[in-house]
Length: 566
Image (cartoon, rainbow, N blue to C red; front, top):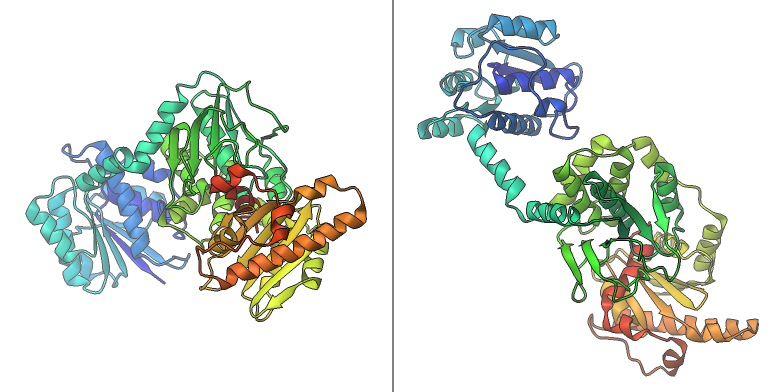
């Protein structure tokens, strides 16, 4: 059981006391669940007056800082935990008691007042006056030397006051400093400038906006597109979240269907001429894994992957430091309005979790902050259903074929699933093979129409799969990804020229051998050294698009469909 003591009940102290009580002492607002109390005054009228020297904005920011600090200094509470407020104002004490908040009248600066109280674990000093709070802090620290104390400095602390507060309190809240830091954060950081730049760009668009994902989009791309469409709509710009290709992975379909996300599936060859402007999310170049004409003007690009060439757009936000594009869009919504649609919030959180592999891969502090912002708005029951979709029979057959056809050399396994109908079954098969005893790296591939799709997984700290697949397959197709998950796609042009089933099967067998040999060779060579192209079979089997080879950004296709969907 934790005993929390609030000494003084001014603007900030009152907010902390009410927050602790109204939340059932389970979670503090501003920490993981958020609270209207942070942004609004106390619900009951208080006779304690705020000092005229402190602006309302400073008090609002101070309340936020106080709640955040109180959350960090206190362990999780339970209904058995204790809370007591000591205030010199009898009216305030009575009002708090009417609200079922334990309170008593007393002088927070008087040692005799504190002498009658059990030793608290956590103390928050929250009066409005600096001199009163300083005396209360000195008394509390003398009376309860082992307690964790968070102290609000009040409206007008001197340099001497600041030094004394810093000396005695474990944590301090300074209205002026907090306000300045908040203003700077909201207006001068690169993230703030990007959000303002996006807003300026959106309001110049006179007509509908197409927000285009990469082909066969993954959760991060889907969520980001829906979120940007929401933002555009909020400033009066009609917008559609669009994609080419299919959403075939069962979890991704479940996400779209269960959340009721509004998406437009574009037809091959569609040029979007009916739209006034076009935005790209989770990829950055037209014509590279989105079936748009390469010359199509782009107005907005938002992505978290490193650029593979010049970005032809008026507004560009490429933030490689975050683990998901959904993180960037979460920040935008939070800065634009702070109002999250529950479906969009759920999609964004799922997108972050998938792209960071549940916060274990290439994750940043910004990803955790975005998740904490989204969490209160998420439909957790729907999220659980998305994560546990029905496994289709075709997926099970692909996994079974991969297990049956596997070739193992040491801890590396390569397997062909033959001709497939659903390319999204490949990463699931790669995951299953990785679960086998003694296996640290896997590659599973399959053929559909004239394409070969590859998906790789690794748990070895000595392997960078993104580099390995680029070394092995960039010369004959497109490849890339993360250190622990990557993918590639290769065009087997000759398959489109054959009608005889036996000949097709023969070509597939040769392609399987070439893909297997190239992957094992890439695993054995030094990173950054392309696999030899002396194989005659490689020359006539695979028709690499020249633009793909010259523009590695094309790796978004396998990365987004095979490597970010699990």
